[in-house]
Image (cartoon, rainbow, N blue to C red; front, side):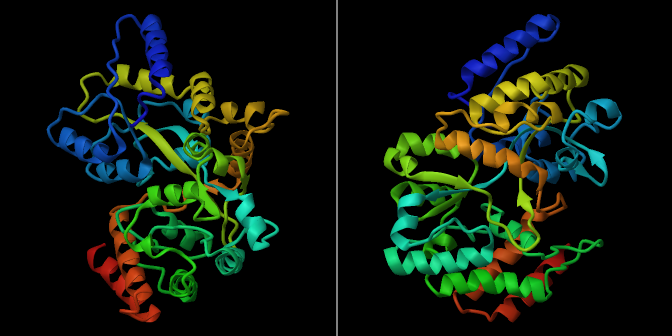
Length: 384
């Protein structure tokens, strides 16, 4: 998914090495833009023309796992092979205790922050909690006219606000899959984002623009903090060298739970493949220790195997460390607390839509916070 042209040479070499070791298997690599991937895969799976191995993420792949679209890996992969991967990350590609995907590369958000804007606002250190973020947001806006952060409330976009609820101690659904967020903690989380919006401390475009806009605003110097993966620092260095130069990295902002997010990319194998054994062999090859380490270094991401993550590259920044080097070390250090915050569940996008659309209504004063959270719970329960 969207790895050309930056990683074309890496994959050509990877495939050549695999084919040399497996002369009876040929691999054809097709790269698909992020925006087209879901539509293309849905169509291909329905038409039984899907590729033998597909790079997705657990959130979207789980929607097709509900339809039994992927090969059941538990009967194909021995426990000792599964143990090569980080256990909480392997779990992210399971639904109803069945493994449908093999973990590949990971990103865990860091707080990339503009030290110049912090200086202008008199903010001495980056916020570590949402409570501290609200205080910093007030100070940054008052002193500089800029915003602390941009976090989208577009229902179809990033799940970052949903994740913030979990970090603030909100349980999203109960064991029966019914809404569990209509609680004092849930109300406090709703109120938190509504207050930031009503007090003018987050940009109005949070209602209309997606996560990409967060990167644009940070690169323009209009926000002080970008909650994103370390890999984006390379883009910032290219697009906005002055901002990159002023950037430093701090741990991800979290709630009282201390939980940190991790985003997982995985490899899945369609159930209808004609070559299940070859597909599995290739998927395990792409995600083995050595190949994960090489790709993580090339892409400034994290590997999902236990041994690759232990490599000193992820724990020690070089003497002449760049902001990308520092972000990588901060990012890797968070892995001990990191988890997929929004659990893999059926219709998770509908849950996000119910919460976000009602949160928007509360931000726009079309509903009270109590009404918005009641309506969100009712909306989810009526379809779950």
